[in-house]
Amino acid sequence: LNAFFQPVQQLVQLYTNYQQARAALGKLRGLLRTAPAVKEKPGAVPLPQVRGGLSVRDITFGYDRKRPVLRNVCLEIAPGETIACVGPTGAGKSTLAKLVARLYDPDTGTILIDGHDLRDVTLESLHRQVGVVPQEPFLFAGTLRDNIAFARPDAPLSAVEAAVDAVGLRDLVDRSPDGLNTILHERGQSVSSGERQLIALARVFVAEPRVVVLDEATSSLDLRSELQVEAAIQRLLEGRTAILVAHRLSTARRADRVIVVDDGGILEQGTHDALLTAGGTYATMYATWESHTTT
Ligand code: ATP
Image 1 (cartoon, rainbow, N blue to C red):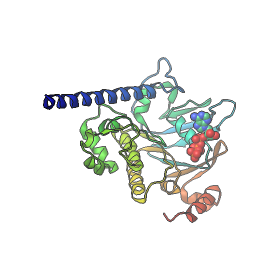
Image 2: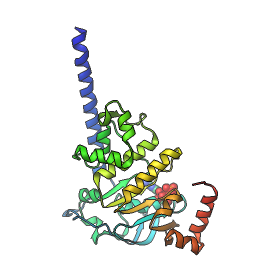
Image 3: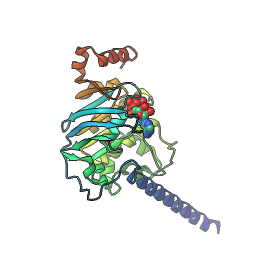
């Protein structure tokens, strides 16, 4: 009798796991859709396919309106350009990135993508073309495939496989007992923090947005994972507009333009070389960073 019940029990367990995974997925999607800080306005229209030009016009924003984190910030980003934001902790770099992805709305001022005010377009269409890689990537209880296809749940297997290869996650897939169908646990004990970051990057590959907003993780990785993550980021940026919150100046060095955010505004901006020649804040930051690192 046991020989009959055991497989049935296993099936029931599998089904329960599957249900839990689906519930977790639904909950997360719900959470993202109803991001408390922004609301879709009545009559919002779908954002047409963009080239990815961004225009930040005189924005002021504070989590508490009385204490602005950013004041009168202006920034023009050309389609395909990579911008790295650097600056001291708490300067407002991540906040600027979040505003560009419309995770918050500015208190005053406007942000446009290819001339469309972010507030005039539907959230779903905006988030399809502006991909976000958060500083602390999250995993949810579900399969590796579901985790990777998170931003585009209907993605065909071929797109998920291509993303796996693009970010260098093939090893993880091959090592996992059920390949892409292996269940990951919420706290993701089964994956290293480097792999977790690669999964977050793979998500953006699958979604293929025109614009990428990437808040670089601060956690330190071993050299091999670090190089893998760097390579995946470089590949992701090809042909896309990007705003990177760069915690490593090696990332800033490779960007088309660096902006130094401090005291609620943009203190300096230019190419890495131009800023070094100018000998200002960035040049000092870079010299300090270089003397502490061997990269
Ligand atoms: P870091 O390099 O440490 O990531 P940052 O330059 O990205 O810093 P932000 O994260 O943009 O800085 O934070 C700017 C300011 O806004 C800080 O004073 C921070 O404490 C505050 N802040 C950030 N997020 C929130 C939030 N969700 N609610 C309230 N205040 C916040």
